[in-house]
Structure formats: C-alpha cells, structure tokens
Image 1: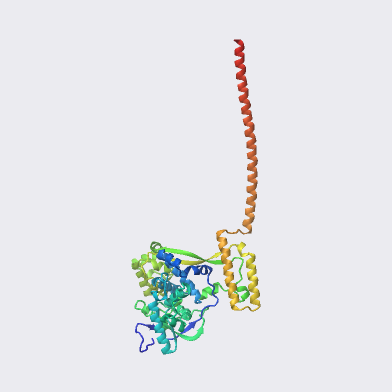
Image 2 (image 1 turned 90 degrees about the horizontal axis):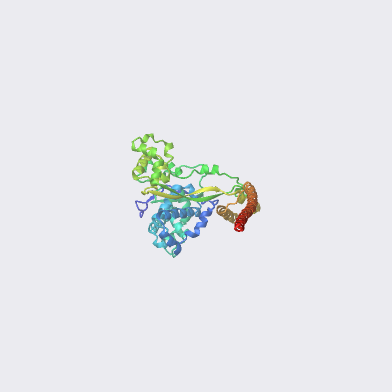
Length: 461
C-alpha cells in the first residue's frame, strides 16, 4: 500500500497500478431502460411517487437506475452481478431516490472525502487514482440519470471533472472486489478486458477484511462475473458490419421481468443442504450442490443458515459463495429483483416492410464506409422499431400465416353455421305459423259445433 505523509492508515490502495479498462462501444442500451430513463429523472411528480412507494419498489427502481448507469459508462451490468448488487445497495443506503440536491445527498460526504484522497495520491504519485465502483456509480446515477446536479462549484464536482472520475468507472467496476474503502491506482495505458480468456486477478486486488482475509483467492473476482468467454462463444456473430445487426426472421427482444423470493421458498429449495449443515455433516455438501445457492437465496436466508453457509464456504474456499455473502449482510424476509429474458417476436412483425428498409439502409451505409455515429443512430432506430413492434404484438398480437388460414376457415364455418341457423329459424317460424293456423281452425270448428247443438235444442222446444 502506498503511504504518504498525509495518508490515512485505514485507506487501502492497490499496491500495483492496474490496467485501465476502456468502455465498450458495441453496447446498446436495452429499450426498456431507454423508455424508463425519462421517468427516473428528478421532478416534483416523481419525488411524490418515490415517497409513496414501498422499499421493494424503491429497490427495483434503484436496480433499474444502476443498470442504466452501467450502460452509460460502457459496461454490461450482466457481466458484473456482484458489483451491480453493491451499487444497488449503495443507491438504496444513500437514499438516491429521495435526494433533491447534490450537496444534500447522504453519500456526498463520503464521495468528497474519497475525491480528496484521489487528489492527494494522484498529485503526489503522478499516477491516476479513483474511488471504488459503488460510490462512483451512485454519483453517475445522480448526475446523469436523476439529473440532480449542484452549482458546479462544489469541490467534489470540480475534483470529479479534474480527475475524469466517471471515465475511470469501467476500470473501477472491472476491479471491484468488495472493499469500498479501497482506492484504485491506474496505469495510463488503455486496454480492453480480455473476453476470450479470463485473466486471474492480481494479488493486489484481494480483499483485506478480517472476515475473509486468507480465504479469498484470485478466482473470487472472475467467478463473480458471468463467464465472458461463454457469452462470447454462445452469441458469436459474423464480424461483417452488414450482417452483425440485421433483424432476423425470429427477432427477440429483452423483456424486463420482476422476480421475488421469500425466506420460506429459499429454505424449501435448499432444504437438503441446510439439513446437512444442521446435522454437522458439512463435508457431505458437494460443490455441485453449492452451485444451486444463488444471490437471491443468500439474501433471504435466516441469519443462522446464512452463517452456516458462510462457514462452509470459508472452510472450502468457495469464492463464489463468499462473494454472495459479502453483499447479503442485511436480514431480509423477501428479496425482489428484476431479470431480463429474451422473448421472441411474431414472424408477422419480423417480416414487416419497415424491417427490410432498415436492413437495406444498414447495408448501404456500411458499404459506403459510414461513420460510427451514423451506424450507432441506425442501431438506436432499430431498437425503437423493434420495441414498437413488440409493444403492438403484446397489446394485439398478429397471427402468422398458418393461423390466418385457420382463422379464415373458421370464419367460413361460422358463416355457414349462421346461414343454416337462419334457415332453421325461418323453417321454425313457418311451422309455428302453420301450427297456429291449425289450432285456430280447430277452435273455430269446435265453436261452430257448439252453436249448432244449441240451435237444435231451441228448435225442439
């Protein structure tokens, strides 16, 4: 750890400078986050809504804000679930939603103190330093999404701009290991994260807290992220710009889904594991069984069960479980989060003429060496087009060709049945009239006979 005459003993700094991570330029913000961006900005109306919302609703909103903030700084939040969770915790604990002014934000004091240390270490060592990811991302969310800005003359704002702190956010996210007191020292050389093969984390990035001091290995950080290599191989596409973003016949769209897990559900799902812990048979818990324990499970487990899982993970050096434990210290009975699932669109919408026009335009611009800003705007247009089609499909889905043919046949059958029914009704009406006429004739005949009998009796008298 670097130490200067004015340094604070409790502040941890990476012992070796880390490579700076560049933001990804190929990321497109999902449509549901683009739509929500306007709703997340500060206003008197939204403030009233946040005050009346429940803790679960506020947490879901904080997660949405943080996901959007990750995309803004050029990082896919799905690659860093542990860091994302820590950022969501920071947003909720510092009351990001209820903040009305930059200087009154409850996280401002901590950010200002860290930025002063950044200034101190950067100026004294001539190497770039930045705060940990959660506090940076909270500031990004507050300034760039919530639009809660100060006068521009605050010391914290001046230091953020002077040391390009928001520009260092991808590096802070990439190297986050759970210690929010750690400042990061960064190399000037700009590199991109290796998506083909994950590199082990350096010794300087290991956590130094008492809880997991000697039990955190270099795999903790890498296991905390989704495997980039797996994602790259499973979603690999041609490098040709003309085919990379074409809308296929079965276009899919990322849809936000609200999920919820209670303590009872979690303990039922992990019953066999918890029973082994209770019966002191920890050694019988296999690595395969431990893979079933997710962040949601860890969030809602009872403290005694959470502690048992932690002790087992510490003894077996299971870095994934240790990482989940670090962001699950609160005692929650219920955990709510949002998940994103891919939902296919109707082939009728995918074959819409507007999609063909978009593809042709994309190909034309690419062939003529179109600039990146134009291609990026085309991608934004694609997202809007797909979203509109999907929303229409959800509200009133259009059937495919086979369904249309079946519907046409069904309409013909209904028409024939209706015609037969009308014919039967006409025949029934005719029979009813004939029946009424016969009844009337019988009544008349009976009345006539009665009159004749009475007349004969009069004649006899």
